Amino acid sequence: MLLISSIYNIYSQCNTNAQNFYTAKKYFYNSDYSKALNEINIFYSNNKTCDSALYFLALILNKTVVNEEECSYYNDTIISTLNKLIEMNPNFKEAYYERASRKMNSHYVVIYGTKTIIEDVDRALKLDSCYVDALLFYYTLFNASYVDEKFKIKTFEALSKVISIDSTISKAYAFRSHLYEKMEGEKDDLFYKALEDINNAIELEPDFNGYYHSRGILKIENGYIDEGCKDLNIWVEKGGVDLFNIEINKYCNGKK
Image (spheres, rainbow, N blue to C red):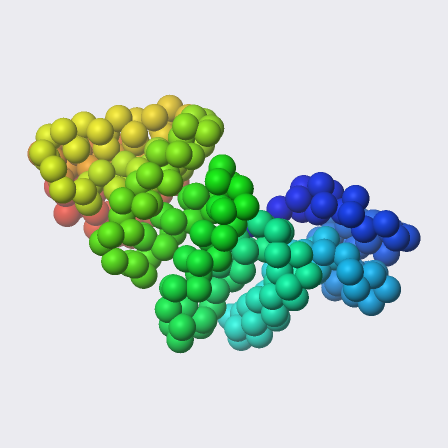
């Protein structure tokens, strides 16, 4: 996700009249993205060397996508904007990460593959080895099956690093739990490590229903049917969508 907080940190580099910039922020916070886009374009036209203006432009463009027909156009426009930003400031780590994200969300990955996407994430991490969003993005690539098996180790190490940086990020545990299920080794040992991680995710974010689904399937696939079915029922109770009770009936045969 594009982070507006990063704009504030970098904006001090732009020693110019900031009226249009701040007006654009006001419209952005009020979800009036067309007016925000107009204001930031005016600002950028008068401040061509301001990296934060380009970053904010990409942020606003990201919010203007309203339907699937526009998605391809805006993704290309955002990528082009981020290309300009990186050319202007090759040390802008967020630009590499956001360009990777945009490429994953467009036809780009289908046409060109993941090589340049991984390169962008690697560049962001070269600038900041503790950049949590970039570290987590390795899992996005791995989970989407866009990379080979060797990437699994890199992804596992990245998730472990996230946890060492900030042990309160629930999805890092959930992602790593999923990776344990796909690793080679002693099955029971991997199961308990995966279970410990998903338990940690639930402890940190008990209202997120998806974690109960993950734990339920993990338990069921490892022979703990009754416990797993309890988790699947919690998943549904907390808002999980199981159309026609397909998963409950498949795994649990009506068990509560």
